[in-house]
Length: 233
Image: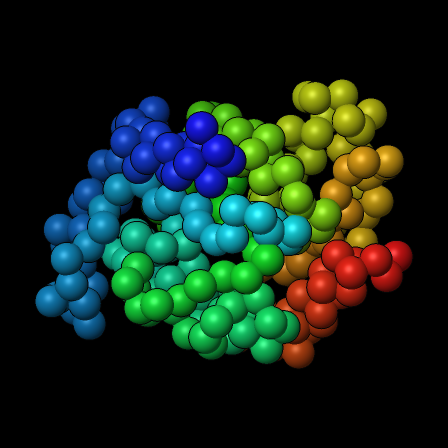
């Protein structure tokens, strides 16, 4: 099988996953209870697959689907304010074919970029347990193996940052996670042959409503990712 076919097969495994009963129950319950604004939606209500360009040079790692966002639409960062900001920025930076992401069949295409997450199910109160992140990590590891053109990894938030570094540590690619300090638009060079890591604040409403993260700040992250892919080190 070719790389894109293996990636597609992996996403089928993600959707069928039932490793975390607490998360599965929460996703299903949110799909039944719904939010008033989305009463006419047929919620996805199960683990959310990753998506994007199989030949991507940029890999984006988020935290987890939102209960009434990706858990509703079935697409990462789609259906909530975090995604509204992210896709506008990706469009501005040339990574997305359109500035909005509304549903799985809205025609959006990602160019040179792939989006995944540390967790594929919506956690209650957006607070996953450590064992749930561990359960989901093999999917991220398989994606890292299959996305062999990646030159830059953008970790949106500390949980995504730690999840990626934990994979590298366990694979012997870094000595310790303690040498990498999380910060916004901070570049981390991981050694020969390894993608460059950029840490970024997550585009959550909590961060954007307080001014901790602005659209311009997030745009600069992806402009930097573009430059690093093109050889500006």
